[in-house]
Image (tube, rainbow, N blue to C red; front, top):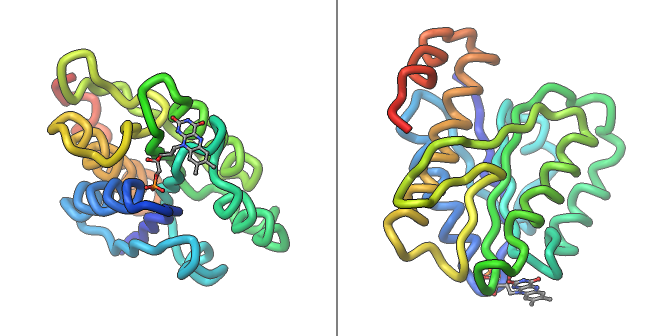
Amino acid sequence: MANILILYDSDTGHTAKMAEYVAEGAKKYSVNVRVLSVDEASKEDILWCDGIAVGSPTYLGLLSWKMKKFWDDMVDLWGKIDGKIGCAFSSSGGWGGGNELACMSILTVLMNYGFLVFGVTDYVGDKFTLHYGAVTAGEPRREEEIEACRRLGERLAQWVLIYVDGKKEYLEEIKNREI
Ligand SMILES: Cc1cc2nc3c(=O)[nH]c(=O)nc-3n(C[C@H](O)[C@H](O)[C@H](O)COP(=O)(O)O)c2cc1C
């Protein structure tokens, strides 16, 4: 069975809540799921996973220093972990506060390790989507914010099943979905 890691940093708990919803989405599929904070995760967890969702609070429009340091410290794995599937999520203080930029900075880090990163085109509510990853202002409260997190986990599981487990039927599931 394919392995999915939900890795997050969170100081006041908002991104941690997002991580739980991302995991909820991934668990709808036949995959192993680990949810770990950046303080708990190790190199073994990175080696273990086939797909990863990385979440960070938006700090100055970027990922947190802790999350950046985690990946800086992973540099001896550089060139050895290419091809994992990655995506991002972030909680900011407010809309317009840079949560999508923070997602992009996470995706930049993952790309540097040779990961295959993706966005999600689905609408999960009225004028609410997750093109660069799931984003919230504060903790996920509204149904569409929660659904964005779940959808990210679902899509990660689907891509991992397609590309890692060779289950092409999930490609049809994605192509035929309602958006
Ligand atoms: C150092 C620092 C920088 C921050 N920078 C931003 C920012 O650029 N934009 C924003 O909207 N919120 C910013 N915030 C607010 C956090 O992104 C927000 O409170 C977030 O929900 C915290 O997530 P957490 O509960 O997972 O720690 C910042 C907070 C801190 C402590």
